[in-house]
Amino acid sequence: MAALRVVVADDDVLLREGPASLLDRSGFEVVGQAGDATELLTLVRDKQPQLAVVDIRMPPTSTTEGLDAAKVIRAETPDTGILVLSAHVEVEHATELLASGHGIGYLLKARVTDVSDFVETLERIAKG
Image (cartoon, rainbow, N blue to C red; front, side, top):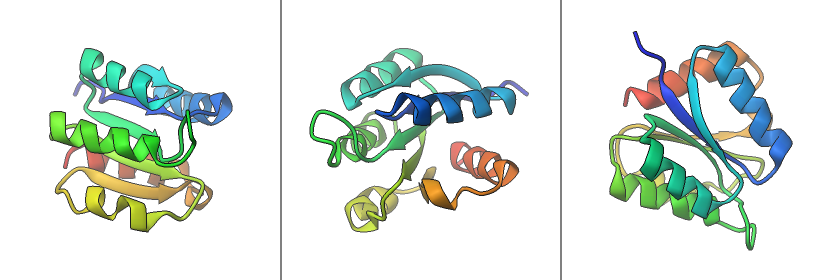
């Protein structure tokens, strides 16, 4: 089976490189990394990944730009799986996206304690 194509978006380079490296080692094909929402949308449109791992808070205001970009991804490419990964509990902001159908997930960064569980979660999201 072909590797799942994924983009990783986080404004913090260490918190972006870590998951990207982990995913690469776990058999995913990381086709791009983004440090802001605009770059994320460009990557998704150009690379057409099966999965986007997106931080909620991204520049320029570090409020909900990542979540807003995830909503655009869902509208433009509804078959792209989306994992919203956040350091902050912000479920109320993500409710609309989470209710938008299949292939959506939300995790707190601090709650990811097992790599294999994280990888399995990403695979389930990508597959719908």
